Amino acid sequence: MRLSARSNVPTSIAKATLLLVLFGTPGWGGPPADALVVVRNGSTRSVPVEEGLGYPAARATALAQALGYAWVGDRIRVGDDYVSFSAGSPFFSVGGDVYQLPNPAYRHDSQLMIPISWALDWLPRMRSRRWRNMDGRLVERPSTTMSPPERDSWLVLIDPGHGGKDPGTVGVAGTKEKDVTLAVARKLAKRLREEPGIEVMLSRDRDTLIAFFDRPKMPQIRGREAGPDLFISIHGNAMPKKPSSTRGFETYFLAVAKTDEARRVAMRENSALQFEKETSAEDLEPLQFILSDLQSTGNLRESSLLATTVDNSMRNGLDAPARGVRQAGFLVLVGATMPAVLVEIGYLSNRQEEKLLRSSSYQAKIADALADAVVSYLAEYGRRVWSSYLLSPSSRRRVASTSTPSTTLIDCTTKVSRRSSRAVMLQAKRHSEPASRRPRVSLSAAPIVAGRTMRYA
Image (tube, rainbow, N blue to C red):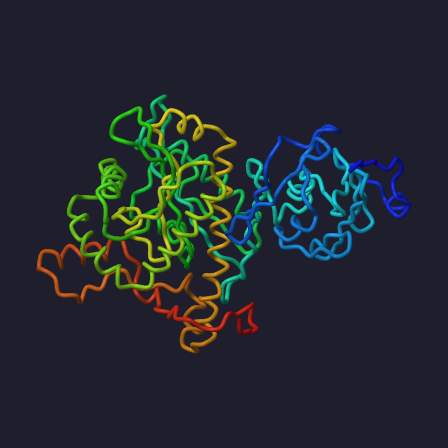
């Protein structure tokens, strides 16, 4: 079928305000591709791509469906706006504004074909709150969460692993784990501060050493009454022998390790205890008791859900092997009485991955993936918090002065040996907050709540 391009801009478009936004060089619409990959609501959708005129384009109806937008006539409804295309023209209108693509839309077998540069370039730039281009994939950002009860924002505590005289693992080319984790943490903090309803704090914002058990409590140490709502500790991984072909990311929550590999990673990270002068071996004795006690609390479930959300987000955002969600006894997570995870963002013992982890652009991708995970998790976690808050009058009075629904980590009434009991009491005294500061709030299933108005899903 012969296709011809119109020489003039349609009259309705010509009368609008002309905004020329050139997405690339005219005549070129990006690299060839068999399909446009769209990641939305955690699911991957593929939109078939054709090159009938020498540049990639997709059927408008299929593209709108993959993006979750309505196709009305020859227009795509994007939120409250309609995007109008004209066959044979590189111009398209959004409301009263007109934009230009490198290549024109056209018709093929009565179907309107839209250059995929509209999806990969225009949407991430003009609708950046929802979409971003991740290496040629269009990835949807999670929606902003509601605020917690009685407060204006959630407090997310980001922990860059190691620091100061503790370099962490050292890569094949000499990259120090402490430098990579701090760089990623700073980018993550900057990204999260762009989200309404989220406050961010770093356990360290410079090259200094913070004790394991102080890290989850840095807000209180710095004078805040309430603790953090989420705790994310960022680390770099390594194999015993360098260089190694092993690469990828993995996410941990606090529980007894189930595999030798998880146990090895925890032992390597916990070895940093040697740099702390005020922590003795006696402090480690109740660790297994604490881990066993933790498994019966709601905190374990929430941390597991947070770890799964992080894993899914990084799978969508990074071109790296996903090594899954695991559990192990990390000391830095022991003092956390809120949902907490430790993320191993990559292997410094792998030459290629070490090079990536040193690059600012890859660090930004990691930060984006972690930020999306935080926002996505808080959206669901917030509903559970609000449900408990509204359904329990006693919880409503108590939650006003606390950070998150959480449970006491150590139950010293449990029957243990005399020596272990003394150690647990010592651990609780040194590294745990008073139980009165951490009231119990049920996270049982309840109606979804939006703001202060209850609605049933």
